[in-house]
Amino acid sequence: MSTKILVVEDDPNIGALVRTYLRRAGYEPIWVRSGEEALVELRRHPIGLVLLDIGLPGIDGFEVCRRIGGRTAVIMLTARDEEPDRVAGLELGADDYVPKPFSPRELVARVKAVLRRAAQPAATGDVSSVGPLTLARGSREVRVDGQEVELTQREFDLLEYLLRHAGQVVTRDQLLESVWGFLAAGETRTVEVHVAQVRKKLGHPELIKTVRGLGYKASAG
Image 1 (cartoon, rainbow, N blue to C red):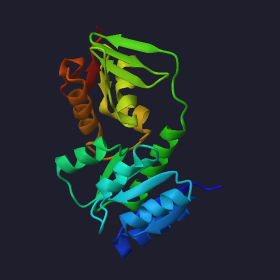
Image 2: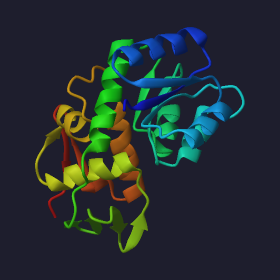
Image 3: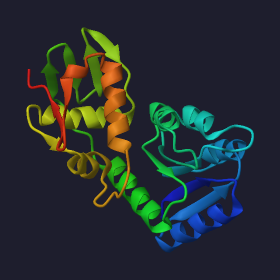
Image 4: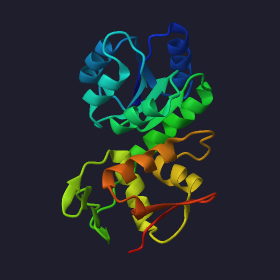
């Protein structure tokens, strides 16, 4: 069976275009034009991924993403390009953020990458500890100074990868390929926004250092 992709977009031109390209790529798109319809379809079908516009009539994309609660992969589509909007969507559990106008081919590539990453089995059994931070892969639990820290699925995967390579410089492209599955991501600030959010939630920015012009490095101890 082909993967069902829920397209939540009130612009008829964009919705029809995205649906066409998803069909060509072998997916089964379900197109709705409001947040209310999206919630109905999410209950009705096993959805593999949601392409979610923020500026919807009635229930907006942020609220839909909040109600999904990380149970389904989400790529947010929006004409808004302000960082607070990007951060808000990612904090609610979105896997990626694609500003309009966008290339339909690139969007399909993003869909494939997110689905590919979501299908990979999680690492189990290992625990990483750096200073006040402890990460348990099996239970996907993060604690700082003994207190549990709530991370989204993507934030956890990002932190886990950095800790697995603690003391090494990891480039933005390495993170995009290994954590998001993007082999050719183009222009995106997804990594930067996620790193900023993880630092904020951990409360210890020194645990993830920016190596200017190169990438990021997790503290080795």
